[in-house]
Image (cartoon, rainbow, N blue to C red; front, top):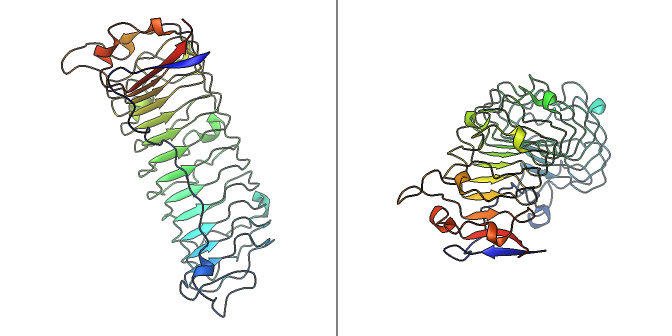
Amino acid sequence: MSPLSILLLSILSGSVLCQYYDYEGYLDPSHLLGPSGPNCPQNCDCPMNFPSAMYCDGRRLKSIPGIPPGVKYLYLQNNQIEDIKAGAFANVTDLRWLILDNNRIKSSKVEKGAFEKLASLERLLFSYNDLSEPVGPLSKSLVELKMIGNKLSMIPANLMVGLENLTSVHLQENELTTEGLDGALEGLKSLHYLDISHNKLGKLPAGVPKSVQMFYADNNKIASIAKDYLQNLPQLQYLRISHNELADSGIPAGAFNVSSLIELDLSYNKLASIPEVNENLENLYLQVNEISKFDLGSFCKIVGPVNYSKLRHLRLDGNHLTRSSVPFDASNCLRQAAELTVDATD
């Protein structure tokens, strides 16, 4: 079965705006910045041309070395670190970035008070360790928090209280449940990016801040969307709920009719029909569901000179549709579409 792309008005001229936040990693420029200062610990680099940075990444370290005063950017990723002592950061209370990705740190091996004095910390990257509980307390100045690929089953309700500068939270690839997240994100007035994909959520959690613009919950067990849930997120632009268990019975009428949405991904679910979406939506992904009818009413209630769908990309391949399923007057409703894809079986 091969996909058939139906070009409605114009050819595809550009790629869809990327919906994923892809952190490229952290370049280690220490070898470009000259020799280290005299107080630098063995196996690390503290370039004299960049005295506020200390590079200890990929050095097979089993513990955090002594950190000289003045360091604000600390790179400890890709090591074999197993614990964090209470006084590990005592000399660098003005630390801004702390990167601990890809180590072997367990929650039980993080001593109480280890992060308590890091009042200026802006980025805490703690992905791919062995955390069963999140570390804390967290700095009020925190902007980005990453705890991807750990064993977290819940986030305490008080962990993020007062973090009004936090804009980006990455919690994917853990063991989080809906109950374990309910209310944990309340009060994050600046949160724009939230990724809780690859967890064990049965539904979207309560208390997601109204400021969220990019929300990813793919690869969970979500079977329903609460009525008005998305209407309570007035700035939401990108929503991904692919690879879940959504069926028509779990979606209230108009659940996805949100004027702020630009991109919606509902692929790899159990939908039997195309849900109603707002006319402002530009990208809709519904591939690999159980849809057997192409209903233009899902996109356009009224068609006229100023009433039509803004959709540019519509994926419907992997459903029970053929080319003849597309109504002959689809071009009136979908007049801005660059690509519409169904399965070619006729």
